[in-house]
Image (cartoon, rainbow, N blue to C red; front, top):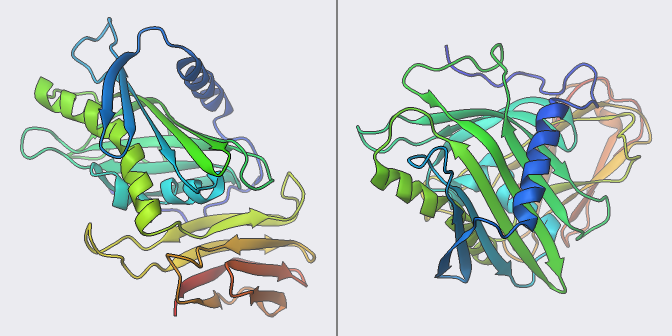
Length: 332
């Protein structure tokens, strides 16, 4: 039995706080590791200006150490970089160990459960998978500090154990996106137990590859740009507006741009709610976009969509939307 993506993704009591205790624990661990210098071993600077660190676990000397990568991304906002690292179709471009993944349940606009598959290493090491929850800590204002926290959770009904895969335990995967003038300081910290057996040489490779993802994500932003992202205009608790899922098509290969079709599914929604979708009109969609509203939900004809041609799509629900529709954005 594979791990399927439920439809719809939003939980019945949306918006709510899903797996709050696990998120609180992981968030506290991330902030502790972010502020502490104790135990971190400098691994030097790599190509692209990525600074690497590791912290060995004395209780598990043969396991993957806690790792950290730091990099400065010139001329980048926190919102734009979040749109590079968050969607699975973008992660395929910067994480060489990532096989795929999808949402299991959405608790709010900024919180959801997920399933991730990581590649194996030949015949020696089984693929890993992770069942986790993500919470974004961010302001509604543009280009403020953003913290992204992920940690493992138990969701046996949504994501049972899979034959041929070893389930990893993610204590924390955290990103800090910190604006510094026109630039962005990106810090990525990961503490994970891969479980099962793994040769030490491959443990070492994972410990190096993981924090280098900061530099690879920077490369994607600089060469390709950022995926579209939602900017909410309604109240903080999202009264009357339910978001379901977001996705962007992955590339066919590592060097392929891909079809770059972005989908944001939402609804039900009350009349008067609205939001923007911000897209990259300078790089990813330099030739402009086509915008289509798909679905047959009652009230769909009351959803007004307009594109300013400069990177902002406005969506306004003028009469009650009774179901789910998809806003589709693709290059012209």
